[in-house]
Amino acid sequence: MDQLLDFAAILLGLLLRYGVPIGITALLAWLLTRLDARWQEQADRRQVPLSTLGAEVRQVRCWETTECPRETRENCPAYAEPSVPCWQVFRKRDGRMREDCFTCQVFVEAPVPTTT
Image (cartoon, rainbow, N blue to C red; front, top):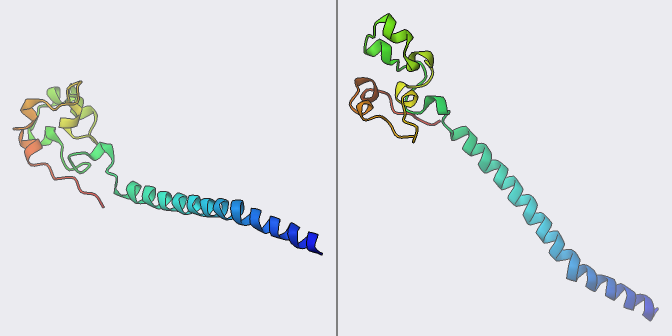
């Protein structure tokens, strides 16, 4: 009978020594995974689509504001991409905007992007 109690005490000691920390670690990993998933979902809901940076889609069309003639409009890269604001189309290769965009009536009067 003493051997059975000794064996039970050893098993209980091993369970407490190794089982409890492993169980707590697994529980924390599960909770952190759920928290990360919730944060990712919130971030996805707040993210502004790249095509609308700087303007609402279909609200700012520079060729309408500047009244470009048809010949000029058909050769314009901004006219070829109507869902992207013209200042995004004309960005320089290094990512900066052209200087003349900052004083352009289309850029100045564009609505500010909002997140929902």
